[in-house]
Image 1 (spheres, rainbow, N blue to C red):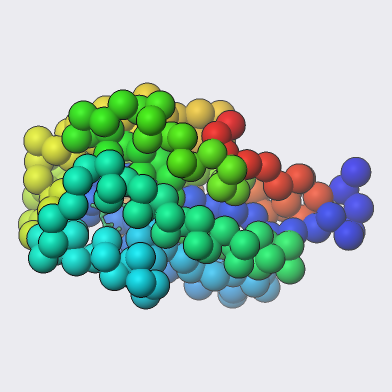
Image 2 (image 1 turned 60 degrees about the vertical axis):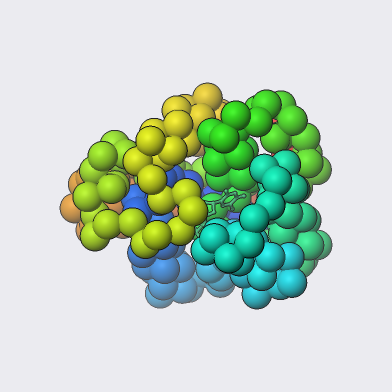
Length: 212
Ligand code: TMP
């Protein structure tokens, strides 16, 4: 229990609606962790660099059309193709800050009307995050922020449904930060939560799998 040999990095996931500030905050968080002497990497899903990721990217920019179930499974496959690397990085002591994960997968696809349990099924067995931080923002506020970039899901009515689905998914590893606070305040709250989590993983908290 808590032996040094069980020490590992933390799997930290940031979730939230489009334009909630996740990407900015995840970049800052990794920089701050490194400044404090922790090894940390920034990951994001979809990972558009793989061949599956390129199919997703083309779909998101409306360059291709796919059935709703098919694109859901591609998002999931994109996480599965990274699972073993994720596990080895964590075991080598690197903390991973992940910009979107399975919760985006389920919240976005079920906002199209797909059954939520069906959406969760292909995510079962992926690594479970140690901490999920949701940057909470009213959909109307998010829409005002510099406008949406024109990708497929960046529409107010759709984002409202996604927000409702996030609420359904909230579990015991979830923490909420008010994304309307000044950026520095969000950054500070986030760092405090994550440092706590990094500590418990260093002390040997075992890795677990979704969906739990
Ligand atoms: P991004 O803007 O963070 O790169 O995400 C692209 C879009 O893809 C965003 O609207 C959320 C959506 N998405 C899904 O629909 N399913 C998923 O599994 C993930 C990771 C993202």
